[in-house]
Image (cartoon, rainbow, N blue to C red; front, side, top):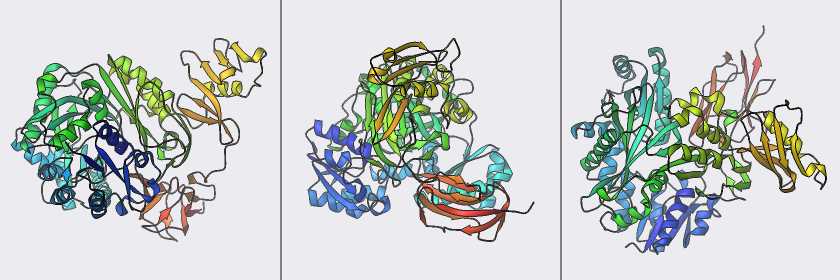
Length: 621
């Protein structure tokens, strides 16, 4: 068994790996950037090594520094986690060449599955069904346009390299193809250093289903059943669950067997995920499920598989890397109950899900369930890395109970002053169509009006706020039952002022919350949202356009495109420039017809939240 392990990653996944390694008696070594020096994963490790400044390209992506850290600390093995260098074949080879155990897929497998076009060709040869599309070498815009016309719209443009929704665009009409291709290539080049793309027929009403596979060094490969990752926003997964709703045993057997066949085609070792796209317009059927790609690493959503199988997948990784056979045979694995995972992000749904950065003066998670996180109260969400704060994971005997537990858990989240998507997650998990299993990858966009919380407080919040501001004494106000504050006669508010807990019953909606004071800010936490009870602390200027036409940065980030110059005439809605932060692009548009009077930024420049980017002067009427 491996005796010492360096984790070439950060945050939540580093904490997750350290937890299992410690239980197995393995010494752990963390590597960290300057900004991560006090993070929980650094403190949890037995040893830690600084590897550079905050930007990942100067720290977590610098292979030589990670290898040096492993050599200096005597690490016997390196676990790459997910993201960063986890699917970098050259790094895996360098680790093995240095005589260090690589806790991941073989470099040959990573290469075979790393490029989507080559992977699909390999799967076709292995008799694994793939989505119709184009994966050819001719990458000229004219040829790609012709192929898209042949496939038929809507069509999906996807970067050949990478994943995570980067370098992916849906095109609904021929006239939109050229612009989408340019944007896709720019994003793919910046993210993966490879601008090549492939085309796929866009599936109407698609479901995203993936199968967890595992192989050892003795030729054994098993599956640990499927996960459903259909609930997505901008191709980023939001809620994952296992097993997949509506999956019958025959279809499950077919998709899992196809996944094992795919893994065997590349002599797979370690944890991997075979991702499929399903046309669920007539329910899940084996003949309407196609291979998309393989992730040659552990997935963010692996906890739901652990919850339904009772297996520790990180422990499996470490045992397989140590040369041991798989801990279980296929017939020893079974599904037990239902699990769901929600990704808690530092973002503001009411502002288009823009990232939210800053200190975490308050960070409270629900009790009694599994929460995987890599940050603690008093820490800070920086603009340098993925904005995920935690994974909220529940397990129950059935899907309905799991969804109810997930919704309740999300409502209990308390975060300030950083904004989160907790209330959005609670609404999604409690949504009637989600509970009924009527989902596809467009679910969130289609139901945004009822899933995304309002920017201004709704009536239940105003009612609770009014009660929170009542004097706290031992008289009649201590317990109010049936009290109305400008409420209709059939609406009831109950408040227990003694412990600052509130129940606001409004028809069949009963949000729960409490008020607290955090560093001078008096707040009402209600159903996953935070509402100031009075003037909040001063903060950066808000995003958007001021009345004088000044466009302000909605988030800290990097300017990746500037499409105008001072003096240019622009039309309302015209794209002026593009910002990138936390794996997300944000286009800044002209607020009205006019002229670019001031341009304060250039490509490659860094901006802070609230910084003026450009100013548009109104054109003459």
